[in-house]
Length: 276
Length: 275
Image (cartoon, rainbow over all chains, first blue to last red; front, side):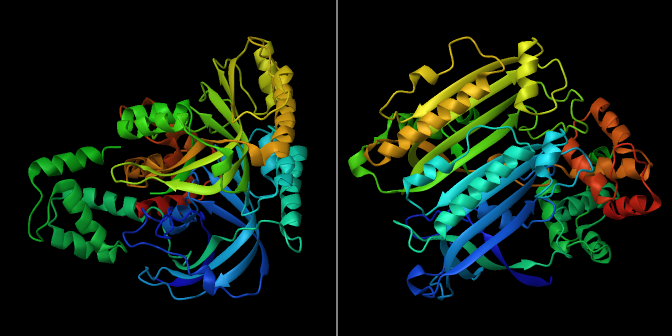
């Protein structure tokens, strides 16, 4: 599968061993950030709007940031505005997933769109208008990360309807926090791992429904009482990963041997499943 | 698979009652715990959020609102939080527990629950307030001030039993006042446990929706609109996830609920179910 390199937002929380907590369940190996002690001395300034949704984001992206609604009807927009220092220092005993870490502080604004009316495409600028017209529900969250000044408290918006004017206020609160972070030397700054550099599968080849498609395929094969060997061969022609076929033969029908033919009862079960 | 910070509140306790009793005990302990101002690591994060929960959407079999006000909501809840957190997380030790980290801070949480909705609510507090005033919906609220700041704010608390369309405005004033009070004494205040980071079991991505995708693909191949597919699903003997059905329709290139699938949509659906 083709991959490309991407910088993705991550939940900055590390456990006592210095591993990303949000990625603990993603993969068995511990995932650590590149060390801050070896980060480049120069500070960089970065702002990026980023869209996450079940249909376009990989599991790694969804796991890294955490707290993102992963049902099909939701989209999360993340605006990171951070001052950061890059570390590419090799990670000892870590996995090779992370190619670099951005240590920084700043502001993270999340807007989550839920329950959008079918066919309404959510975009940053149109979220408020769509919410006001009742086409979708919108939620917001603003976090200032690594900044200690209590002055920031007064910038947090009060409970509000998300409509065109309040949305501007919320974005403006974000701007103020950003302006604050960009000051020459904000007091009590703490650098946190905010973004990581990873290789992700090409958007073209990424399919969030690959597993579902393979499972449907397996039910179809079992309903024809196809042996695992034959099913795997057919899968290759249909562009389905044969490993997934083996997995579902085992998980659903406890068939592990290449030559075992699904029983009549299993055929009936599969036919029943495909009754739709 | 994913993780998320969840507020320590009734909702969390309710969820845990059915899933993880050990964790529930821990959460109850946490509610009693406090970090004295002298032990507090510095405050390093400020956070504000406003979320909406609707009862049906939070379950795995989800009923989607295809057009707002189609009656698919019975009730929903707004949750607002503004607060600050200490830099120190407490990582929970031991296995078998799904709490990963505990977090201390201060702030205010407001929950507004709207139920018995008898009208189409087109979003927005103004329309909700109006519906409540006219008896077309009922509302309950709760507020929770986590770590009390010194100073006067009691006069801004909403009067007991008098929730109406003005309540949101009142809450807004309360929040502004509390922010002021917190700001002036943040470094001398005790912190309380506010959130726990948990593995997000509800968001587990498995293949539980495969059958709903299959169902949707079949309906597309039959040339049915999304609206018809959904009404088929609602009367079927099996339960289907309407979000999944909707997603399959949009994946096949359909953009409105009444639209009939084109030949190209049908061929995309056929490809998905290997036909």
